[in-house]
Amino acid sequence: MTNATQKSLLHSSRLKPWEPVLWLLAFASPLLLSSHALIINEIAIVALFAISLDLILGYTGIVSLGHAAFFGMGAYAAALFAKHVMPDPLVGLAFAIGVSTLLGAICSLTIMRGSDLTRLMVTLGMGLILMELANRLDWLTGGADGLQGVLMGPLLGTFEFDLSGRTAAYYSLCIGLVFFVLARRLVHSPFGATLMAIRDNRLRAMAIGIPVHSRLALVYTVSAGVAGAAGALLAQTTGFASLDVFDFHRSADVMLVLVVGGVGWLYGGIVGAVVFKLMQDTLSSITPQYWTFWIGLFLVVLVLVGRERLLRPWTWFRKRGGA
Image 1 (cartoon, rainbow, N blue to C red):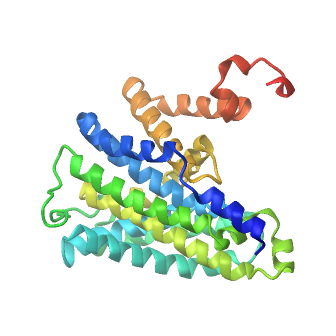
Image 2: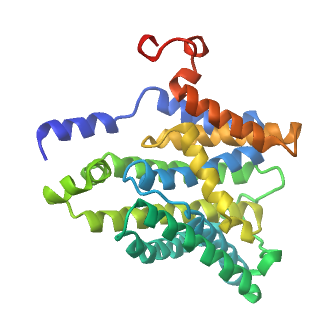
C-alpha cells in the first residue's frame, strides 16, 4: 500500500468536530425527551441494522433482500437464551451475535457464485426459509403466536428494564456506538479499502491480487453478526420475539433507510433511521391507514430531486448545472 493511500485512509478515519457533538446529543436524548425513550430505542436498533447492511451494500456492493434472516436469528437466539438459559442481557447478546455470525458464515458460501440478481434471490430465499422454520417449530419458537414469557434480568445487575424505556434506550445506544466504532475502524482500514476496490471493479481487484472471495465471505459474516446484534436488542428490550422479525418488510425497510440516509457512509444509516422512524411514527398517528403512501411519496421526491437538492428547496427549479 502506497504512502498516499495510507494518508488518505488516516485522514478519512479521523473524527470530525461535529461527531462527538452528535453522539452527546444522542445520549442526552433519553433524558431530554424522556417521554420518547421508546422511539429512541427503536431508532438506535434500526440504525444498527442499517449499518450492518451498509457494510455489504455500500462498501462491498452486495445487494441483499434477506438481511432480516440474521436480524431475526439474533432476536430468537437472544429470546430463547433468556428464557431457557439465563436472563443476563449482555451474555444473551454475545450468544445471539455468535449464532448470527455462524449463520452468516454459512450463508456467505452462497454469495460466491452468480450475478447480483442471483445473490438477491438467494438472500431473499434464506430469509423466507428461516421464517417458515420459525413458524413450523412452534414448540420452540411459539410459532405464529411468537415467543412469549421472555424476562430480562437487570443490565449489569443494576439497571432494570422498565416501561418508560429509558434503560432500553441507553442500552441500545451504547451497543450501537460500540458497533459503529468497530465498523468505522473496519471500513477505514486497508481491509476496507480492498472492499471498496471489489465494489468498484471486481475483475480489476482480482487482477491486482485481492482475494475477492475470502473478503466477500468475511464482510458478509461480520455484517450478519452486527444484524444479529440489532435483532437481539429488539428482543431483549421488548421481551418478545415473533415471526415479524424474519418478515420481508424488515429487509425492505432497512433498504429504504439507506436510500434516505445514503449508502457507503456509516452515518447514512443513522440519519436514515432517524428520518424514517420519525416519519413512520408521525404519519401513522395522523393517517393510520395511509402512512405508507406518504412515505412512498417522500421516496419518489427524494429520488427525483436528489438528497442534496432536497435539503435546498430553492434549487429545485434550477438546472442541474447551475445548482
